[in-house]
Image 1 (spheres, chains in turn red, cyan):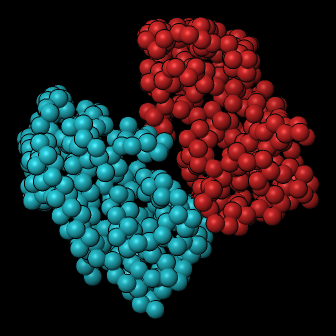
Image 2 (image 1 turned 60 degrees about the vertical axis):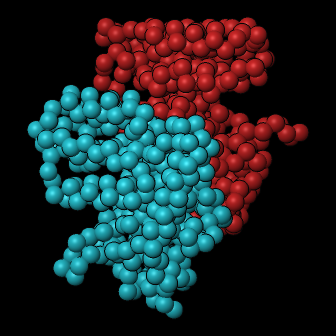
Length: 287
Length: 287
């Protein structure tokens, strides 16, 4: 068997185009274009690239780019005051503080200045609580992107066995919650799991977010399963995921490549979250 | 094989005695006795019994009983104002709004007046978020009670297969998070799970909180497993749980009876939470 490769680049493009259409509808219906305030502190080159991409795709989707750049030696109070200003500004639908911040700043304390309804990264404790209780809220972008990929592939989740490898606050834990909300029987495996391959082999849907290159091989995959690889690692052979793609593709029904799988979904879901935030803030029915 | 019966009444008594000792230590060390404000609205007989038990055990543990009773026809604003008053009162370590409240009141809106640090039920969205993110906070009493039973029985959780049946906000979901925090490989099963017995048979530790009398029989239990029954149902044969106790006792290594298993733990953990809340509020190191 040769697995279908799931084209995350194409799905992300479709999500962004859908967001763009809905932004246009919102504006045509008398609403205000959503505004995304990316906040970058200092001049870390990788962070600059990430923020530039977010701003570009935000603009392409018809949303307002409300970027703010602060010098690397800015003090905590100044950043906090900026976040408070953005929190109070009705033009700002979503606030994204680009991490990591310089070491002299307390990122946890700064993030607490972003109100839950503008937390478009979906990583605040308030949004984690809403997700854990099955209540509406902004969902973390990467796991939300995985759900969008599964939806695009028409993967049946109700009653399916889903296994999530990894229990990070950014991916594994919210991923399990989202799969549970979709009525899957969900297992979270992690570094203490005894026979990881055996646990993974139960999965109709296997999401790997362990941060270990090539962790999951063919012996860990049920024939025909859908395998989603959230890992991304720079290796001598180029970018690689947590899944041994060549080996797994011989067993799985469908698998995401790295790069070009989950990666492009994250910004697409950030834009979708910004639109959702704006829709709620403007008192319009959200989808 | 005949399973060991886990004596929740005895474990709960030991937890309460420990809380009582620590309260005495806190006071002897110059701290203030923790105060629990139970808030009862109206005169539902079952609620009155629950609140009376909580108050009695609170007093027995050396804590201040700061009970408040409101008439059944009280309006929303009056209850909200009382909760705000209790939230601001330094004598009040924990606030417990007894549910259900009369139908004309909005319980969700009322619960939002209880600050996270006084939410000794551990069921607020804020505390759910802290639990989901693996951060310190007050944990829901029933799942915390299950963890205390497992600890009392010296059940090894790291790397163990744990299965939770049921995904309620009160029990199933936080239960899964607590087992995950203890390094178990955790599966959440529920009404949509396809072969429930097969999923349950994987479990070294099986926690059943499905709300269906006798749902789990011997065919769903791995020989030697520890089985915790959170269900409680009034039947013609008396109180019964979600587990068919007679059948399961022939297979399991240990099992909680109903009554006398998980039930007594809930109030014990409420008292433990009230002590924890007081300890944090008084700026003392918590255990």
